[in-house]
Length: 302
View 1 (tube, rainbow, N blue to C red):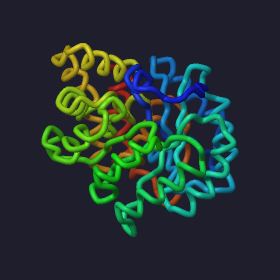
View 2: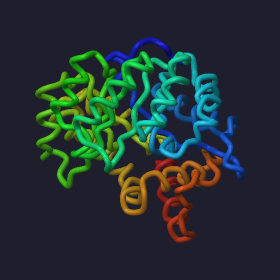
View 3: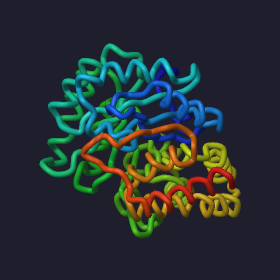
């Protein structure tokens, strides 16, 4: 596992895969199946793994947290950057900070809490977490009222942020006043698009951010990497063609649920057995599963 501080070059050199977490029938972390997922992603040329919402770190037990972090660090390849998540509740993240401080992970993403927050309160909480964990953090901006641009800039200016995952969904990703203000106030080289393959052209070309996270890269990493390179090299016609290949599975993720669909797509494509969802989530219906399998297999074979 890569343990050096994360640089803008790291963010640009690889798609940031956001994989699901495989668990056995007793909901225990399954090392062998998670290793299959990681090897599949790495074999496709992707060298950055971000364990957040798709891995359901929102509902992870504190009692298993240290063990899972240790196993993921052991499984990741020597040149792979792995980033775990903490939170979203303040008390949870502060207890997790005690564990994270003892690890070699170079950064950790704080999951965004929706509701019962104010921007000033989030700034204070993330500051206390970063100071306790003694690592710069990944700021995950998913909701417009979670933290304002001034608050994000304050954390960045104080050296508490490694990079920013920006994931506020817009009907038109090219029309985004928040992101436009953010890239004016914060160096866009530490900002990545956080909503998968579809808004990549708008975010990387239109707003100048420095990379992107994706879930469907876990099914077809080589193609997602080709998309990254096409956008970076200005080959936008090829980039749009690749986006079209990813769109059927992405449309199902958006129409059903991004986390639940990706979790089962990885298994239905025979990449690894992801097992049951960790509650408070549940599985797909038989009809949904058939649609997801068809889209996942088509993407894998495209």
